[in-house]
Length: 400
Image 1 (cartoon, one colour):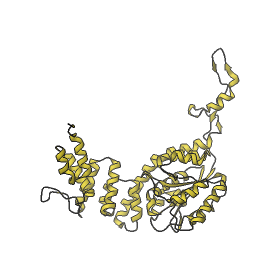
Image 2 (cartoon, rainbow, N blue to C red):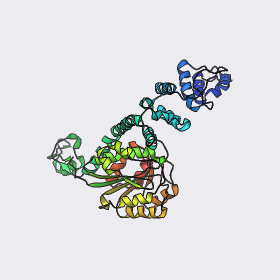
Image 3 (spheres, rainbow, N blue to C red):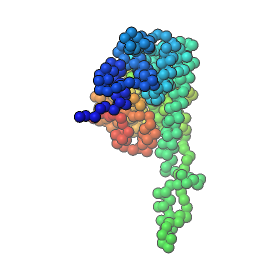
Image 4 (cartoon, rainbow, N blue to C red):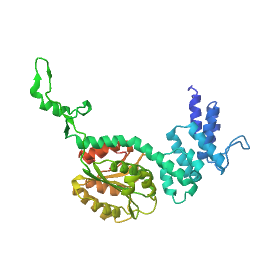
């Protein structure tokens, strides 16, 4: 006779499946949610139960409804509930689903509501798409939310990218400034082999060599070209902040461009304030990647010292064959060309696989990359590692 189901497992399945599964689960064993679990169930049902539309609370027949209702107090209570019951990453998913499934843009139109929402790149993407409709009274709060997310991303990425750039550019230069962290062991050992002491069984170096930490100004030209179609919202947020980090490094001469059917040069805002740059992006509209690549090509003065990041799903509304030819020509000239199909934590990107394969055939890697892998990507590009091997190591998905 099979063992009875674990009551805790039944409760977890009840939370996953919702009230509709209560009767079936009760047949398998007692499935009584605790008070806290009932609160979690109520919060989840507001978004995921099919019987949505009414405010949470008792209803005839002993069940409960599942809607959030129109009232601000009810919505505010729900926001507080989900932040109390769930971890930050889960709150982000539920929050995004509330906006997508229930059309709850009112979350973003009232300052009091917006203050309670969990700041994250997906939320910033939603704000970007709604920026023309955000009421005046909410704009300052919206800017604070964007600033919070920008600061989070900078804390997450800036140190790693700076270390990657400095490490890649300075490994061949040496410094007299003594620091154990900067010792060039390979160079030191090779230059002191003649000082090996047989009686001691060790090498006693006459001189220790250290890696330099000086850097040449604008040694590399970096161009970040971002697709601002609606599906690329999260990638645009990360791309904007990454461009701002590049712009802050003396070793990088950085240009940041956003495009749909028109091209917007955001380089000036990038150098001043990434929040201004993000608010300069207008999500949605058509896509003319070829036009944007053509615009960026004029800033390639030294191909061997230029990195071109195209952040796009490659769904081209312009001249596709000309785009592919232009990208291949750029790569053939010596530019380090990388196509990021997505720069986000949201998983496998959706993209035009046919265009990606044609670009890949010309030596241009096309892959999705999580932000955490950006420092490794930047270092590998600067050290002139094989781009396809690098992409294979870092990608969330690449064309077959």
